[in-house]
Structure formats: structure tokens, C-alpha cells
Image (cartoon, rainbow, N blue to C red; front, side):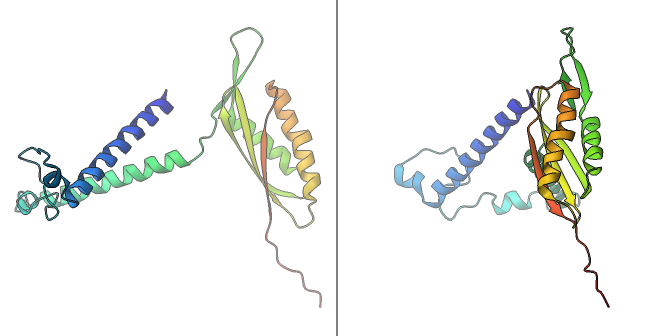
Length: 198
């Protein structure tokens, strides 16, 4: 539901911005005069030299002490909300819970954070793994796992990945009763200082 509302709002905002841009372009190219288009009397963009806000519009409330702080504050809040919304679109949402078929038709719910913590704890017990970060994405009935492993210099990456998939991920999949648990693994070496022999 939220995804649909989000897409509808994005589409409406995009259409509004495209419309405003096309009106500005038409005024800059002097198309209303060339094509003989009728424009409302209060319309400020009529010719290339016209501006969006006239001098009278811009200075109507300038003598009031509260006007410019309110305008700047309102635009700042609008910019911060837009930036927050953009970052929310880019960020991959973490899965809060996994839906488990309990066999009685009602189902059960397993907290996503618990699965992440157990997977990370088991992965960190493998030789060569310094630290593990796990996040669940996807849908409640079809979760996906993203694993980031920080490896020590002595690690064998192929062995670590094999054990991760055959042990930790398989344990989580079996305990949650899932038919599959797709996993994306990112490996990164830990930084270490070179030992000098004197």
C-alpha cells in the first residue's frame, strides 16, 4: 500500500515539475505570442523577459520583520524533508519480521533482527572471520540475506563462503522453515600493520 502511494506521489510530483518546466520553456521561447495562445490575466510568464515573481510580489511583505525568516525557514524545512525522502527511497529497507508457516494456518512471526544477530554470531565463529554484518531484505514470506564479512589476513575466502552458505545460512533457513534463503555475500580484508623482523 505504501509503495503504491509513494509511486503515485512521485508520479504527480514529476508531472508537476515537468509542467512547470514546459511553461517556463514556452515563455522563454516566446511561444504564447508566436502561436497566439490565450493566457490568464494574472499569469506572470508571458514573454522571455518576464520573471516568475515580479518586484512587487517579492517585496510585498519585505517590510515585515517576520517575512524573510519564515520564507527561509520554510524552504529549509522543505529541502530537508525532500532530502530525507530521497534517502529513504535509496536506502534498502531492512526486513522487520519473517512470516513462518506454523502448520496450523495462522502462521508465526520471527523477528528479523534476531535472525540477523544469530547469523552474524555464527559467521564470526568461523576461522578467518573478524566481524560479520547481516541484514535481511525482501518480503516477509521470501526474505533475502546480505552478509558483509571482514576477513583476517589468515582467512581462506572460499572456505569461509562455503561454511557460511552450508552452515550458518542453512541453519537459519531450516529453523525458519523457508524453502530457500538467497544470500549475497561481500568479503573485505581487515587492515593490519606489517610485522617487521629485526
